[in-house]
Length: 99
Image (cartoon, rainbow, N blue to C red; front, side, top):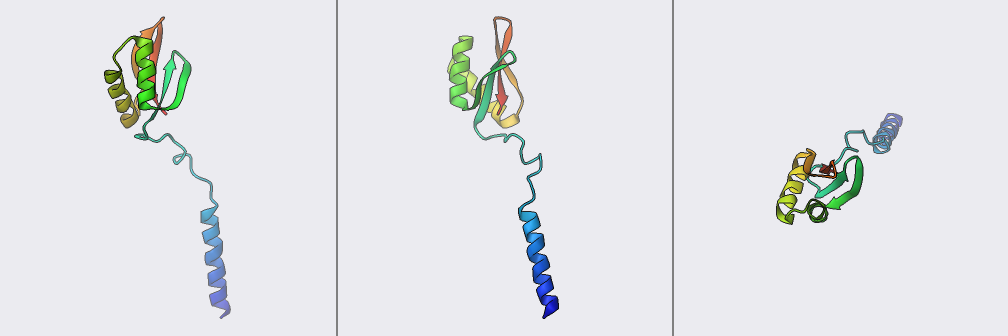
């Protein structure tokens, strides 16, 4: 009876330890394919964690481009995690970055 009580107590203790263990840094990384991206002009982020459509609309307006191709580029960034430069504006790159 005492052994069984000790086993249950130890199981509960281990379960609580696992439950309250902080998340690892790997779990805190950005999520690829979540539909959210950032837009930066030079080293200044002008949009953060926005929908690809919003990012494409604003980026196309800044660069003077059609929205469609910019949206496709934004989807590629979201799926691959690679930063893409859309155009250069006043000597600064306008980039779409994975959020």
